[in-house]
Length: 368
Image 1 (cartoon, rainbow, N blue to C red):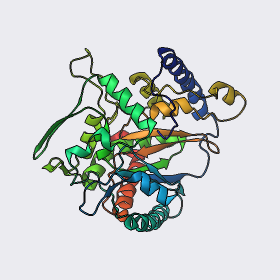
Image 2 (cartoon, rainbow, N blue to C red):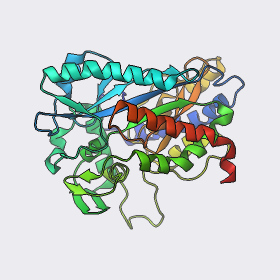
Image 3 (cartoon, rainbow, N blue to C red):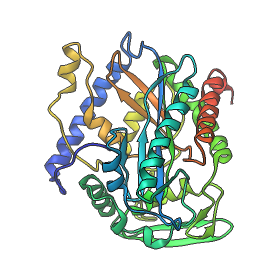
Image 4 (cartoon, rainbow, N blue to C red):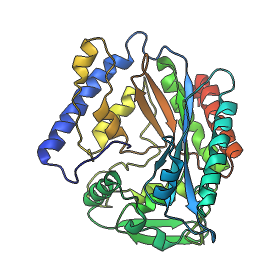
């Protein structure tokens, strides 16, 4: 979703052209990922860390633009709301000590971040949901002033056609309505990316699906929302409802949510997940590029599949396939359900647990 957006509205012709392109790209992608040598390279892992900014009284602090300017570091970027910040960590070889290397980089980055932010009177805290968050923080006023977020809000709100409803019944109940998608920014996570061999993708992905509820339960740290005790892990439910464009009873079939656990087991390879997203979800951002995937592939080069990647970026499953054309190409698994915080060591341990279970149980997953 880091794509540059230059317009707020799109014509029906643009939506039609975009849909035709991603349909064509699906056909090419099938050949690409099933071709000899695809993904035949050193496996790597990386991560994205979303964080809250707070002030001296622990309130959400909407100063990410100032902080990003002071940091002057391309590994940091803005998030949906002005009190959030994202750190994109480097890719590390899976062989050796990838978790130690990732931890070291994270800690080094956080030392400088804390110093720069501290000089500005800002503190940084990684946590699934900030306990001091108040309802006034969940409004368009706090959204980051970038067109990509504005257009996402316009598109999702338009599809829904009425206010988003948050209904979470935990130890205490939360019921609220929101006229925009700023509520999604209340959720922060530690999203880990793991490259896998093509012939291992289905089993590892399915094992990750099987075990992620356990990982999420153990890593839970978002038990308070707007001063109410809700679920131990409220973040996933809030994320789903804050972007849910479905209206109960509006259609005669159970339309899937854009934020979901998934639609079933992968039977063969990652192509099924790309095809599923194209089949189930209406395009939100019909932005097209000059590259023609079929021509690139016929010329012997790996296509970027920019339109298909953009479309996948507007659905948010617990695990998501991510295609890359770098080197020999690969499809990696993005673990999206691990919460941010509370410490760097906790997050690395949670990631190691999630990835270890996925890889360790992959050979047995069909027995479950």
